[in-house]
Picture 1 (tube, rainbow, N blue to C red):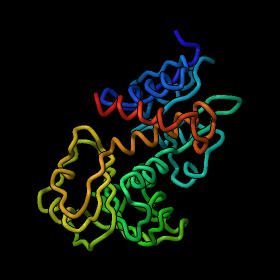
Picture 2 (picture 1 turned 60 degrees about the horizontal axis):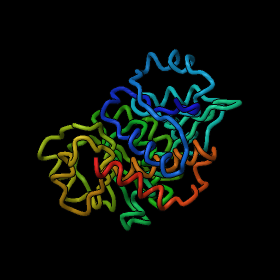
Picture 3 (picture 1 turned 30 degrees about the horizontal axis):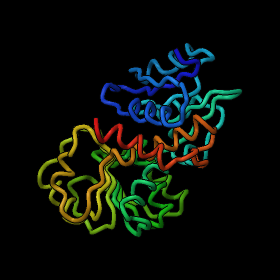
Length: 273
């Protein structure tokens, strides 16, 4: 068994492709590191974290643990501080938290030819929606519309917009829509919207980045009409590259040795699955 252990935690977790991505990266980097997966719910997160020994280098965390991870760490990067969400834990003298989702969204859009955004629509109001808000604001968006099943629960994301100096409007899914450059869907995989809502969003939403990737294509992606559709696998891959940088160098911005080849091996591992 490797002396360095890593894993992805979440609930549910059986669908996660993170073990495929990370295993491919560490093979390409010639690192004998073990990366697994474990189902951990929000109530059990603290206990599970306290049970880890010194062989553990870090964790990837996904729904519903990003807020719990944020509260557990002693130090955070800027994106984690802004969003209140941590998806990467690095063990050491202190427990450090990072949010690589923000960079993963930007990288996924850039890879698909989208390098600036003026207007955006975000579907959902949870932790990933906050990351999407930071991402499109960094790409230039100054008006961002958030669609939520219960708009009254979007107070935190509205406050984040104020902190970033961008205008955030919040509406229900079935409200009327205006055209935007980019739509980022942060809804859980398998979410079904009614046909009239899908048609309305798809006709005016510009390019679509759907963070969900299982099942794929999502119902929303299948019905999209107004621009290109980007799979959540692109976001997953790019945020995972940044996680690997954290686990190797403790720095999500420091590129890996031969990163192009590493990225290609990671992409092959999930696209060929």
